[in-house]
Image (cartoon, rainbow, N blue to C red; front, top):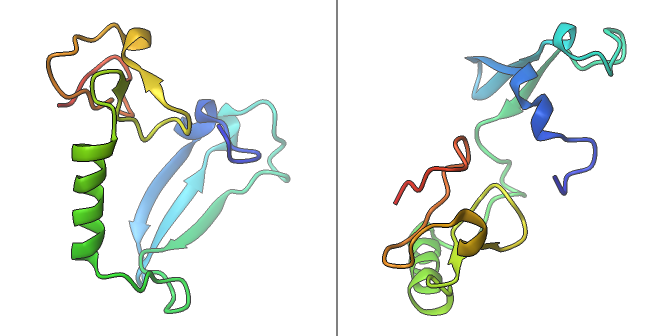
Length: 116
């Protein structure tokens, strides 16, 4: 929701079609979307599977994993918040009504489900 022009409601209109030359080909079905005219709508596009060397992270992948695990083990308040990749802001356990006895990881496709 913090990305300009992007709406989760329109996510179902995008379809991943194939992998072609290290890129994912997507298609937008504008017939389901009354807000956009066919000539104004992006119909097909490609997204690279691998970042260019100028966009790649210089930190080793192992160190990123260790930092991620350190954050959730030591800094993240597991008793009060839910791990969520769907929203930019913190999600409280009270908003989900989930028990505090176990780790809570929100399923981004089924927001009422705890995948932990």
